[in-house]
Length: 353
Image (cartoon, rainbow, N blue to C red; front, side):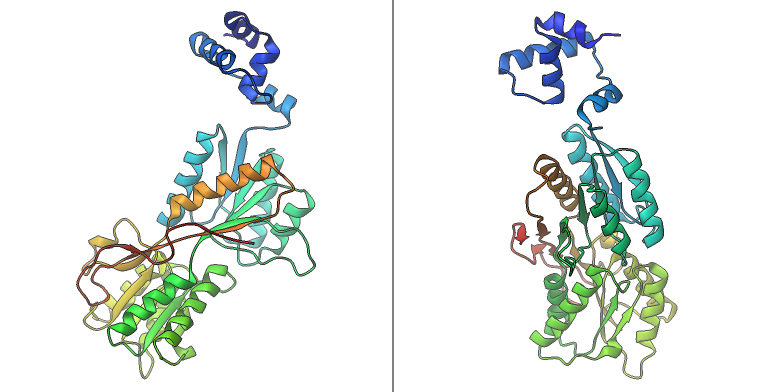
């Protein structure tokens, strides 16, 4: 097996120069760098990652803690994280916190003990212990999909990246109102998630813009899962004056809503118009095809890695929250002919202070 000394002799440079090229610890002339890389290729040299980590205090690994990895939305986020991390020479350790604050803290502690260089976390609805642990141990971290408010005591903030939620939800409500609906229900996500709060805010903004009153009976939490979405939809359909249109706040709850409608022999959009937050690969296979907000999930994952690498390079820079635009995928479950896909938010990332 080739060693670093073999690479140095083959390239005609010192072992220190080989180390600087492989670890990117000091600028090296372009032709010298290429000679080292050519030698690595020709000799089939494989760096000793463990030995390198002892020298650099870096493992070239990142931790990813996201729940419901089987959910297509988080699967695509994972693809974005992995591709971006590998592109920068980082491996990935993955854990599922199951949206449970206690388990979340445990998996983050385990990732930390594995000496990952930094972490990307989709925080639970009660992230206090998580934030305190990361702050106490000064772990470089980025939150994705769900944002965490800045501590009231002025404690450290973390970089965050997510898709827009309020504006796209308001757009769905406005679209349904424009079709003549006056009682529009919302199957909201789990209480405590920032995405749940923001989509309820967007729902209310959409009603206000359409001149419609807010009726709290038309908002039921589906706890972000299929079974919860089914129960929430059943509750809405049981009202004395049920909604004529429905917005579901994520893809899993959309499945639950469709089950509840099927069990009651109701059709979409004949008996109830439906729009959903989260597009997913088979949304256009339903009859009717589902009108949806599509989140830039792979871009969210890739942006999280970029933010984390920036944090590793500049530990003291101010924290940033980056929001990415969604797209409106106009199909037929809303009750009107299919239209071209278009972006609901400005077609660029928006950075908040």
